[in-house]
Image (cartoon, rainbow, N blue to C red):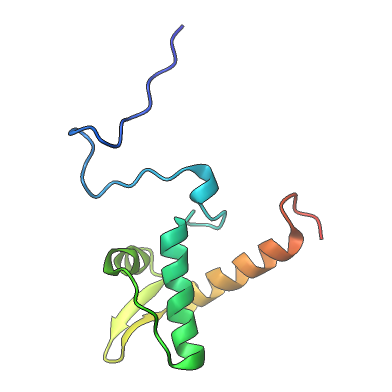
Amino acid sequence: MEKPAMSDPESRSTPPDLRLVTKSDCDHGDHHLAIDVLRALRQLERRIRTGHLDPVNIRDVQQLAALGLAQHGRGGWRPTAEGLAYLERCKSDKALGPQGFA
């Protein structure tokens, strides 16, 4: 029995906004964020701490907003309380190591 073929990212039938993300490019949190999206969330958190904002990709931040991890207000884009909690969970997951052991 043949395995079904993976969708081709260059195929015209693939929606233009769809990004195929390999498992190694995913964060292992609740939302399985792509590395670029997770980086954008970290940059927004850094803005709160330091007041400095590195350029962020608007699509990445909009994905965060759709997940409830960021919001846009008078001061620009900021992580939500859920977004900050997500980053804390990521830090504690890394402290456990790849196998879940400290």
